[in-house]
Amino acid sequence: MGEEAQELQLHQIEANEAKETLSLKENCFEDQKNIMISKKRRYYFKIAIYAALVLVGQSAATLLGRLYYEKGGKSKWMGTLVQLAGFPILLPYYFFITSTKKLALNKNNNIVNPIPNPPSIFMLAFVYVSIGLIIGLICYLFSFGLLYLPVSTFTLICSSQLGFNALFAYFLNSLKLTPYIINSLVLLTISSSLLVFQNESSNSTNVSKKMYVIGFICTLGAAAGYGLVLSLTQLAFKKVVKSESFKAVMDMIIYQSLVAVCVPLVGLFASGEWNGINKEMEEYELGKACYVLSLSFTAIGWQVFNIGCVGLIFEFSSLFSNAISVVGLPIVPILAVFFFEDKMHGIKAISMVLAVWGFISYMYQQYLDESNAKAEKSDTRHVTKVMSPLEVEDIRR
Image (tube, rainbow, N blue to C red; front, side):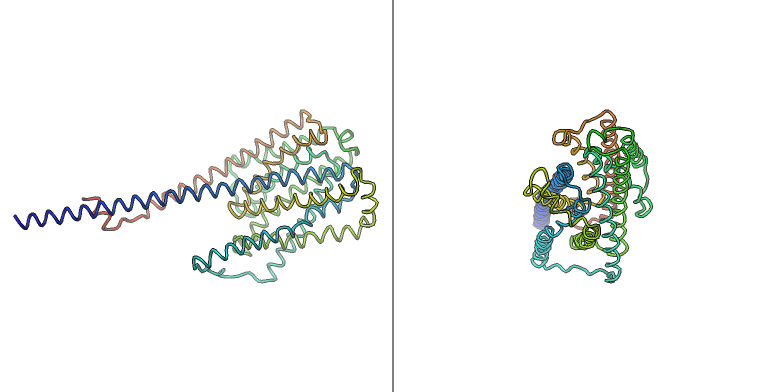
């Protein structure tokens, strides 16, 4: 009897220990769940902030850029320069975030593994210079379009950049062309093509039909170039930089901007437009102060847009960043109706609907890809999970 009682007491003690262990596991699970929920909230809050910066910066910069031409500005090189010259504003943001991450690493005593095969300085310089020159040319084409097109038409044509990005990503980044992606490409192509058939140039921008077509072609070329740059940048990160850290992304943007800003500076002096800046400032309809302020805030607006793009690239992906910028484009035509009295014709309204439809189709494919990736990751974790002997014993008890 004594041995049976002792054995029963031991079993009871083991059962109590098992209950305590299970309770501790449940508490740890709840703590981890709360931590994950808190991290997700912070993550989505940051995504929302960066998306807001993209939408506000892009809309403000585009409208101010059009205001410059609307009130007497004529220099296309100046219009290009303000798109690029504000990049030093990013430097405090770059150094602040970098120092914050270094401080966090020091506190956690984590050691970051170096890149296995770091790229050569020559290859990095080639990437920065080549893509930077393309960006400078793209901004010049955007200035042409913004000069000769109503701002609403300009932004609707720019929405085709998402389609060009998908097309170039198919060849350069091995993107799969699913039915939703193809649907997006077709809709965005039709959306831009419809704008050729409207006749509003004489009323909205006081330019000839020939200049309207030139502006259309330049804007479409700039949208295609922007899609190419995103695909080339993604390819460069994969093949050359071999890192998608915040520092690598910021280095890419800052050094590219440093090269790109040289293009309008050389063009401004070589074309002789620099000599007419003082006269242009004096003849500006809103006055000299507003001339300087409009150009300054245009430059700031584009850099606010860049900060949002960098944040979305770092937190999510370059494709998502581009998608957010495209979804913000229909905002500008609506604002242009109030600020510049642009007319929302039937063709333009249909073009806007098709552009939004194309964007939704594209984003739905991104949603499906993300859901499939999460499902595969969850299945892998479920299959590879192995229970410890103690967990098996607890279940038996």
